[in-house]
Every structure is written in C-alpha cells, then in structure tokens.
Length: 108
Length: 118
Image (cartoon, rainbow over all chains, first blue to last red; front, side, top):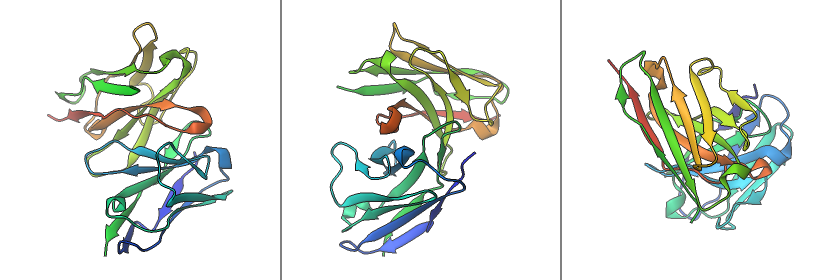
C-alpha cells in the first residue's frame, strides 16, 4: 500500500499570499495518477488537479500542481477567502487507492 | 446534468446490515468504474471499494474486506454497497465517485451518513 503523507497539517496564511502544500509518497507514484482535492465544510470533495498538474474543469489558474516520483506539490498562487479549507492528495494508480491525511489552510 | 445521489444511510446497531445506493444520471454509467469513499466524523478520506464499469472486477480496502460488497445495476444506473457485520468504526459519511481512469475521481455524490451505535 502506498502511504501518502501531507505537510504541513495546518498552514496559516493571509489572503493574497502563496500557499505551498506537500504530498510525499512511501514509494514512487506514476505522475499520471496523482490528484488533489479540495473539501469545504459540509461538502463532498472536489477534484482540483489530476495527473499531477492538469487542472480539472472550472478550476481557477491560481491552482497548480507539480512533482514526480515520491514528492508532489499543490501551489495556490494568491489565496482567495474561499480557499481557506482542507486539501487532500490521492494516488489512484492501483488498489488500494489512498489519500493523504489532509492539509488545512487557515486564515492567519 | 451529471449527478450522483447517495441514499440508504441510517443509524444501526453493531453487527447489523445496511445497503447504500448511488443513483447516477447525466452520463453513460456503464462506461465508468465506480468507487465508494468514506469519511469518519472530523477525519480524512478513506477509500472503501471499487467496481469496474462492466462489474467484472471488484477491490476492497482491508478494513471492509469480507464484510462489504460492492455491486451495480447498469440497467438502473445504480451503484450499491452492501454492508454487513457493521462496526462502530464504520461510522462515516459514505460518498460514491466515478473512476475517470487518468482523470481521477471526477464526480462525487453529496454523501450519505451511516452511524453504527448501540
């Protein structure tokens, strides 16, 4: 099983700042099968980024993804008020599909 | 409109059974593998099970293997999760989601709450 470890657990920033979220895998993950999701309180997760760096439909270009092998990053270039929520990375190459434990982005 | 709608969540006692449903609309259901993902209160996301579009393959998380069964009825555009021998630790919101291959879990339902408590 591929274990994904996200850091930091909580990120305290101000609106307009840049956010960098990390996702480290216990073994190499194909770049084609690493995704990021955003989850707002009381809502289902929403796909942000798939295949490491491809934005899902309707996702603003302030969200970007990068990485390879065991280290992946989600970057939010300029935080908007609605971005202060929880983010999960996921590998979906094979069973068992696994998620990171999440990073909460909070207002400083 | 592309949509997934879960139902069947309830409060049940440990050891009992429950069946969840996920009704799909707005896309060709049989062309997509389908997943169940759960989220315990205040916790992260946990993948539960997957079924191929034609139902030919199924995989389960170790935590539910032997107790849960995923199935689908493509004629009804509906996904199911039969949950037997429920445990307190199965308490969670259960989401269904599409498997878009390289496109990840593109579509999610709103979730249905399962509470296992005596």
